[in-house]
Image 1 (spheres, rainbow, N blue to C red):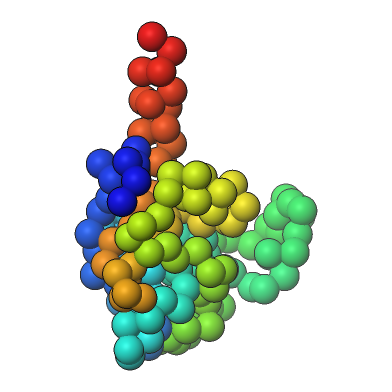
Image 2: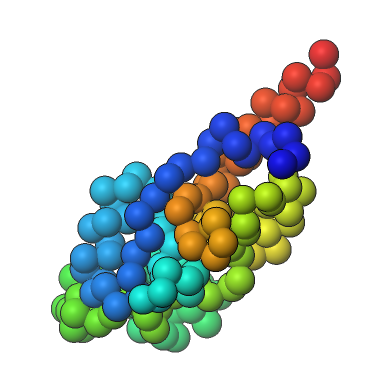
Length: 154
């Protein structure tokens, strides 16, 4: 296995089930202290990521994602929550970021950097034989990368 700056910042996690309800999943994300968690199917295979961004997309109307600016929308946050109260009992399945960003244990730092650069994810799930068991966050990878950069500069 190649030497990796990210190995020091891996966080073991319990993935979400794609059938979990939004309210339960958000609580687990908050309890984890991470910006998102991987979601897996009944066989433990990676399906997507659910976190901060995905919750906001579930809570706010679809057109919000298309707007360049929300300045023209004057509704209160209470109105938005009231309108989408039903999302509390929806499964996360339809609200996942489904980019294929999972890596196997033999990943390289360059592979992680490419994923963080080209996908809108804050966590990259790590799997062993296809079963997700950990994540690396973009913030932790960034800090480890800078530490390596500083050390190389003398």
